[in-house]
Image 1 (cartoon, rainbow, N blue to C red):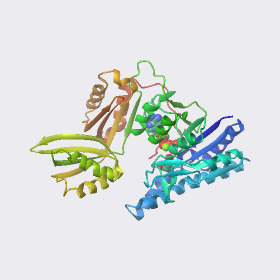
Image 2: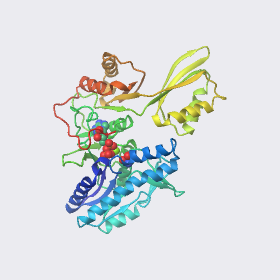
Image 3: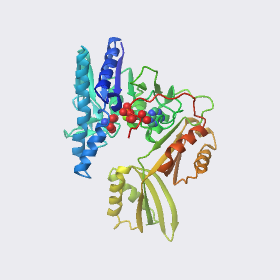
Image 4: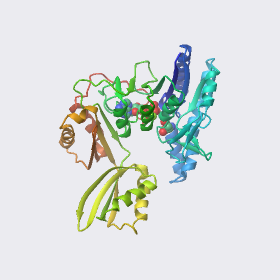
Length: 417
Ligand code: ADP
Ligand code: ASP
Ligand code: MG
């Protein structure tokens, strides 16, 4: 008997038929003699739809109320799934995040898990029940409901797997596993049998939606055996582990893209020690994550620089910049959207010169200019205009020898947001 955490994403429980299929899949596992803790996301586009509704009422809805609203999506899923399992003649119990013992900090919208008390979950397992936990949510010690950030149900699953020492954490989604790039964009993407925590962490941070970055962090830190597979078939998925076997000669193992990028440029800042520390300190105080930073020129004792941030943080970042103008004077500030960050990732990159140069060449041959670049030992990222995304990813995929002849399986709606 093994203890499994099985997480089902929104498209896997998108309607009643899918919900029934998931219920059968869980019961199958139970009948194989295993214990199951299930984590579920909101059905289909529920979370997006709730956000749209709130924004119709208020363009800047209070973060606390958004968390109250969005957590209802997962609450609907867990109760319906439990009802479906009962219909199949098995005992199940559904829990919200806080009932399952998820204690978080108070950062509404992107809370971090502080502690998990899985006593109730374990008790239910001991009682022979299938336990179904709402993903993406918890509560702070002030008793406030919080959410873990978009895609955060993966993190719920992995953190719970670590807390109850599950043997395996399976992430069921609408593709067969982790691919060399988004298989919705590149039909000849290569399915990976395994991938290292470090490479997956980079891909997730760089926009590969298949796993939430914090879920991979948790898995790496707690050595959780993590498998990504399809809820639409029984094909073998991709295992995320410490050391993955690298295919001979593969330098770049994955390509990720992130549409959630805004660029902010501040021109004419005094070129003095401590100025950058003040600017980025104030942004950090406002919980605004800054990614690539480029200083573009120093002239007459002033400097210009640009940085990228999440689209949702753009307005607040501009407000923060305006607020410190009396302390740090500058000539002007501007922002740019409709951008995309494309990244190549590979553990083998560090020992192969010319990998970045090839990326720049492929992009420039398409007549696209690169606005920003950032590199690390295992990745290179370029920020470019959004409008040729698919073309660039496909060209890079081919250039790094990643194309396969197999047509990939993609379940669920093809036109997902
Ligand atoms: P879920 O609702 O199951 O959480 P997500 O939409 O969050 O599903 O994640 C699955 C999607 O991730 C896939 O449908 C695919 O389009 C996208 N994706 C992006 N990059 C990759 C990749 N490298 N491998 C697999 N899927 C990817
Ligand atoms: N329902 C949440 C979202 O859409 C959490 C998740 O699906 O993981 O972001
Ligand atoms: Mg997801």
